Length: 259
Length: 259
DNA sequence: CGAGAGGTTGAATAAAGTCAACAAACGTGG
DNA sequence: CCACGTTTGTTGACTTTATTCAACCTCTCG
Image 1 (cartoon, rainbow over the protein chains, first blue to last red):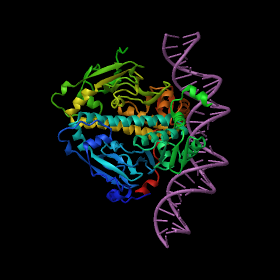
Image 2: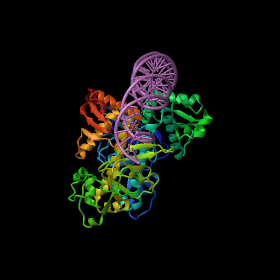
Image 3: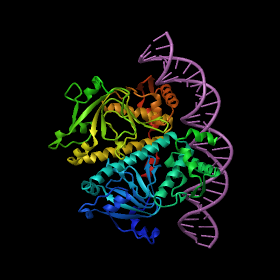
Image 4: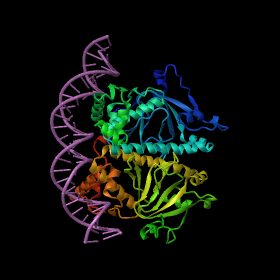
């Protein structure tokens, strides 16, 4: 039971992680669109839309379940976890947001957050006051479409998660997790075959609907099979193809060859 | 082939509070908002927004995976299933839309449907051309908010599904399914304790991430325990409280300690 | 009336969870 | 800087749970 000293420490932590990259404090609408990979069509008056960059240290809460919803956040740097809390206070990891992801959309409907976001590393978030965003969308039809698109896209990701939980066994889930992480890192310009997990085995398990034991065993299994090398939180992917084959639709031919 | 006579049976059209005895072919913006349980603020010119009612017979496809996305549908009457198809063409039931539910939102982002909707009974749908809906939203700030809200709400339902798949065992899943169905029926003015399943055991299993065998066994178990009576697709709920207790967070002292 | 889809049930099997022990890394305070 | 407690991770033995395979039943519907 961790009683947190509140999220007000944010500004102090800036020096902790980013010595050189001095984060600018404000982001333009264009920069926001870039981060979200949205088309941007400049309009007069856009310079009124200025969004604040907020740094967070590791293990800080960005928003908690039950908090009033006012702003969305875009991840500019760092890694987080989005969790739900059940009645007993047990965390359930919903996703691991990273650069370019948007946070807080679950609060739009009820105007209250139903999930809790926590930083797994130092990170920089950009705050998008929802009302301000709506105003910006007014002058940008393509942005408006995109906002619906973002929600629709999230829904598809949820769908994919549901599909995983219904159809994949532990091995396939962990393989999928590694491959998707790898692709995420590649998209950010990092190595796709060598990276650091920011979350614990338990958090991975919670995300995948498995126990930490099963995650650990499965990773050990992959090591023995020569698919990956793991050392603590460091992961080296040795055979991406084999990993993908573990969760992607099985070709009937591939099955024979393996046997 | 979509010719249907009497798409709606007596009870259903009665529940719509429509002044006309037969289903009207057109729906106003106000009627649409009512169905969606959205606030409606009349504006001059709203009578330009007219939405068509489309009847479907049982076992018809409303849209198929891969079809271009143009319209959303609201369920006015009847029952459907929304499924995804994997590479092998195997169905995966995503949800069972019924009155007041909105269909097709997964297509917004890519402008292409990724799911397939099929009627499980005769039904009446109202077609909402997406562009027209956007126009209507322009003049109705509260409607615009609501549209985001609808997507946000769907996301929450997905979240809930994910939570179920990660944490509940077969018994709890089936119990949850029955209770949620029951509440849905109650909301439509039907009996909450006596109703007809429109889907097969296999479809229930697909929805819950279980095999049809497990669903069947679990229902038999409930019968033995005196929680329900089932006879084919007819279900009578005998002990709602016990059913709820099977999946709802068990309250314990832990809750108070946290506060 | 017969074929076929849908449903139930039993026995064997496979998969992941639980319980438990231990080891390795971390970080905090002396 | 080291000692020590805490957190995190690994692994083994056992148990529980749901799946698979199979048989059989019962409704429909043509």
